[in-house]
Image (cartoon, rainbow, N blue to C red):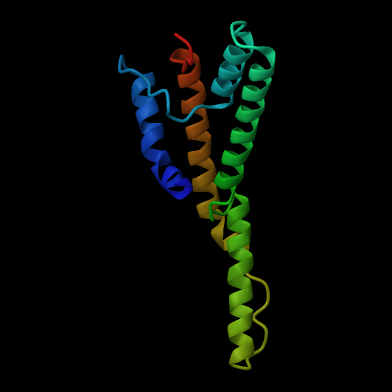
Length: 146
């Protein structure tokens, strides 16, 4: 399920962008930025009809969900993310293992600088995604209640 969400993210961000720049309604289950998370947390904490312990539990749930989502997203095997560093280390280990099996000299560390174009592209896409989501959360926010 998590991998499906990660793979579906670009299409969902495009949907948010379409909703932000048109009169199309925004999907309340779509991605939101830190601005949207702050707005949702504010809505939850301002609901005086809900008991205080339930509001605190909801806020802790929001924080836990946000941290879990960021942890999973950060494990995507692309260079600027931690998953990219893990993938580079695994590739280096596999190269060394193959060299050991065939009794060749150690190939040395993998040059991550070769992946800089990929890193710049992914970082640029992440920046664009962040700007689009923040803009959408400002002009067409997700509202939980009403």
